[in-house]
Length: 328
Length: 206
Image 1 (cartoon, each protein chain N blue to C red):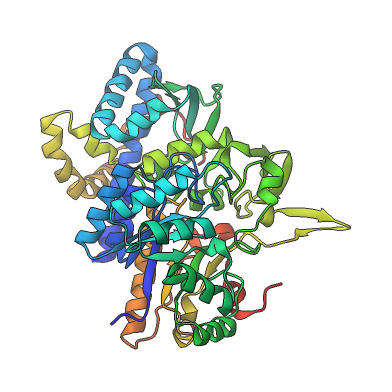
Image 2: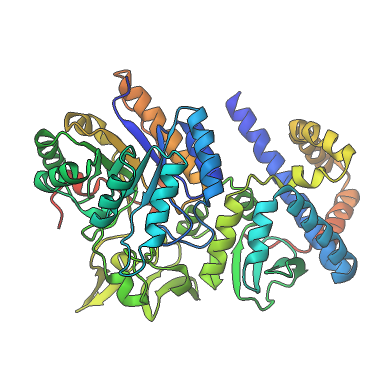
């Protein structure tokens, strides 16, 4: 009996195979359009890709979850409804949804389809989670990355719904699903078009030995010679404020909760999620295999091995995020 | 045993990087006539092995992407879009986007053996120009299982048979060559170095 389910990202079919082969219990992915929050060029799955991916995963007893976690736009519901219908038709094991209307549609149209609540929905208290369960039959909730371990433990003692938490990858410091910074800079929304810092609006400029990153008309950061770089997101930008230049919202750093497995188990977390559908298959193979090794040791009651993942994280820096401290 | 296998793998990669640099140097000297014919054939080979990726590349809007292995004698220009083609060029050539990094890293990236974001964070890779174009190319190639030498070897039966043997024993061959180079009398050593410079060009720092 495994202590946790390990939920792993896949941005394309090769990444799915890498995640499955490296020891994922489930893989999450999205269609190649605005219905998922990682709508980047060259990424994601066609319907044929999904059918092949599900066949590959199911043959190895690995589940596939389809993220349809952006918000349908007024007067344009069809792409989101089609995504839910196709996920059900192709026998996905669950769909990960955020929008209330879409949850309603999925629960009425496909009563047998397992529903997970996306982190994008920002459900962070027992009342909200019970409502999603009672109204739509949601079976699992992906918790926002703004909760501390005691808060997660308290929540799990109050609700019977499975909870899933992020353990590795990029941190989104805004209340999940409510970020408007990228929309302000580019006119394109993470919540509607599925693009945070769309690549079409990103530019990198060498400035001597330094590197400047720009998003739309804004300079996000200037990395000095030898300094590790980060993603060009406004929330991780370095700005001049008063007399100082600093990261005002969050530093370019990645979540890594591998050392917190005992605490997460005590908090009765059901599933652990690795972030990074936009990352390459080499990253996925490396991170998933590392977590598999750690979880297998934990399941056997052995000490969790120290595994160095620093080479693959943003900015070369890691944090336990909100788990060990109150969100500021 | 594990360390020995990793070292052997590294040496084989070193051999492949050397071959790539030699190939780029030769293609640059041959110009777009003969060199272009060879590169067209190389691209057709890859397209036959990876039809899905090449359909995506042909479906992209017309654009030029400079791929610059900074420690090699020349760069390559990939024209994506319906008139997909690959040409060797100077590293200063004008393009819509450019990716620059050490030859070994670019090969690792193309074969999906390393994560592009991680390389970028560590500043081992620089990108300029149209970021969306670079991202689309990266994501398209990462969706494939590309093994450049193996892909090329499918073109010729003898290579197909020989490649696994070379890969298994390549490191021994490299060690023998290094030893031979060390033991050779100075004039022979200088001659070999001069020949290498003529083919590959002067070494640049990665």
